[in-house]
Amino acid sequence: MVRIISWNVNGIRAAARKGFGDWLANCNADMVCVQETKARPEQLSAELLTPPGYSSAWCSAEKAGYSGVATFSRREPSVIRRGIGDPRFDSEGRVLISEYSDFTLYNVYFPSGNRGPERVAYKLDFYQQFLATVASELAAGRSLVVVGDVNTAYAAIDLARPRENVRTSGFMPEERAALGQFWAAGLVDTFRDRHPERVAYSWWSMRTGGQTRIGNTGWRLDYVLVSSDLRSKILSAEIHPEVLGSDHCPVSVTLDVL
Image (cartoon, rainbow, N blue to C red; front, side, top):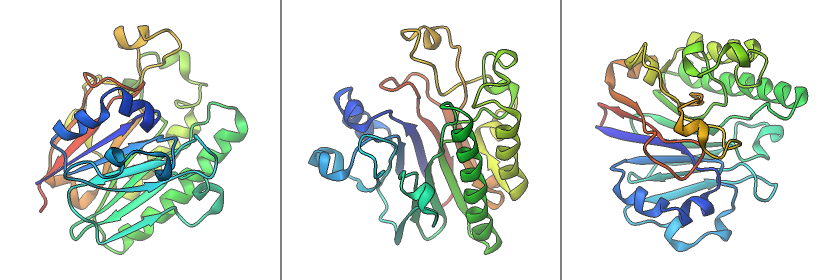
């Protein structure tokens, strides 16, 4: 059995000041994938780089204080890879790949399109390139787990106010269609697979001083996806809004694999 948690921490150093280390020590996860780290390893403390019981791997953006992902693992991966082979995307430190004997884990911070049409186009290009990467792995018969901040709410159930946000990046038809191609390729949304009708969110805007989280006016932007061969191995898939420290909350999956 393996438990994997994904969390957009909105700055790993800020998260550390809010108790990330204690949370990591007590979260009972085999792998913890964090996104939007906004830091390079040389800027971090030993407690973050080598927390008790975990090894860590980092993929940072060229731009300081921006993007970035990291994976903490109790199992040493056989191979660690960074990026998807396109400098346009890899310069932003968005993809960290850890290979284990029974599956490959993709930790991904998908782009946001909220800075205008150019970034929406960039986001859609990233989706396409990432899908091509994953499709080749699936065609080779590799079991995959893809986690991260996808930056799109796929269906109306995945955000509190779908009608008002149909032209807002994160719920635009073209973004949702692009995400839907992941399902067509053979990836399974573990939370929605286990909870077809549950209303639950993983991100709340901080522009209202936290009121959207108090009122649960949120979006489900954070996903754990698995290849279809692992669908029967899903023991649980959950969202953890009780965990504070970021504008996102953690999401998790437990799989019946070695």
